[in-house]
Length: 75
Image 1 (cartoon, rainbow, N blue to C red):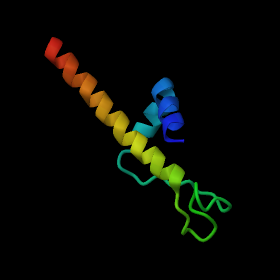
Image 2 (cartoon, rainbow, N blue to C red):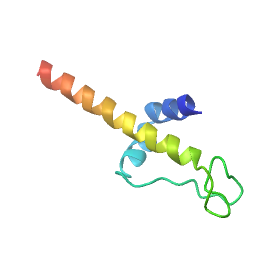
Image 3 (cartoon, rainbow, N blue to C red):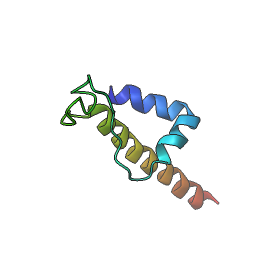
Image 4 (spheres, helix red, strand yellow):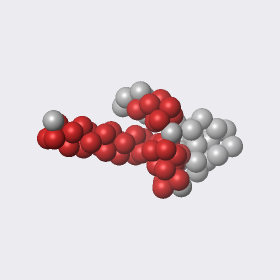
């Protein structure tokens, strides 16, 4: 799932921009039925999708920063 989500956000700039615009906010998959991928009905779920999205966001930021550093060295 991690690699699929990462590929999706690397491929589609529109949703990548939305993800990056969330800043450092916690991302929660708000579903009452998914205790693994979301927070679940009681709010005590694992929220694995939210965690994957936050991890992907951090990695995308790092990748973009690296590209900007490399462009600065050439220019």
